[in-house]
Amino acid sequence: MKGNADTAKYRKYVDSEFKHMLIKFIVLKKVSTEDIYAYKLLKEVDKIPQIRFFCNDKRKLKSDIYNAINALSKDGYIKVSQKKVGSRIRNYYTLTKEGRKSIADIKENFEGAVRNIKKILKV
Image (cartoon, rainbow, N blue to C red; front, side, top):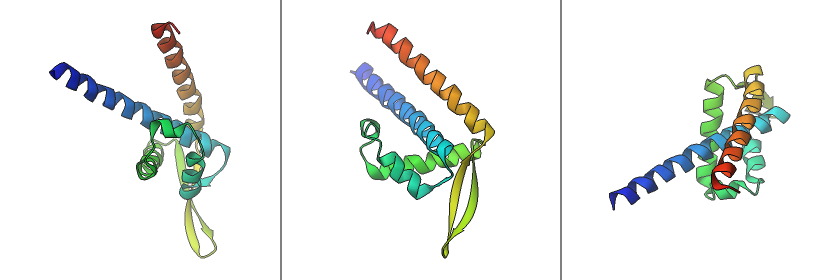
């Protein structure tokens, strides 16, 4: 019985890690097309129908996106600049050179993972 519990725990961990990687990749891709502020980024990600497969809880998705923004900023893949819009100040996110390189690396890693999974499953 313990084996099943360990398997379920491991599966949940892998699913969570995969989801976080995917969200980071989506954030990087969106930021690569334009300087974008968080609320617009949330709305853009929410429009991706496939995101529901990984996260159907909008509050959790919002939290995951903000966590991805913070992690990517901390790691130097995106930079934050403030712009005044009307009477408000917004944080806009811009892709750095390291971020641009990481998009290519992540894409290559995802494609390699999919190829290997297909080989394993003999699809």
